Image 1 (cartoon, rainbow, N blue to C red):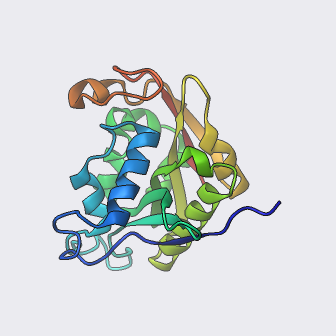
Image 2 (cartoon, helix red, strand yellow; image 1 turned 90 degrees about the vertical axis):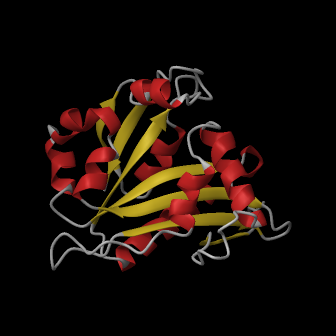
Length: 218
């Protein structure tokens, strides 16, 4: 039986429209990310930075791509409900470093990861799919659409910090591998210190978070 169809579109780009964060699609996307990744993993303000980003700063170098952040939502064609959401960005030097939290020194020692800093690079940041919609290709569709959007903005390389759930392993790794990504490094207890500082409670291990990430690169 073919999968039920869904549509992927940018979550929003009009700052005024989302100023009060009352848009139904925004609320559903935020709930999807929180349900999948943990209530404290992404805040309303954090998602707004991808939905209605401020005017970007100038690129670091003349040939560098414009800074870029965006969010996508997958909606079920039959119900209109959000069934998946993704955030993404073109990283500059600072955001590349901060994406690794407290593990940047470990990450940059890996030759494959270090090469990411030498080319315009897109980060597939946060992604979640509603449990009822899993198995329909939603994650594949969101990541593929995100990569195309990043490529249009100048990205030539991509990476994602794929969550290794202590209970279920890395569900995203197989999706990323099918899209041409490979694992460059596993970082154990990636969110441990950050979860203590922010109060984030991991869906798999509560607090502090003991989960690892798989640094997936393409």
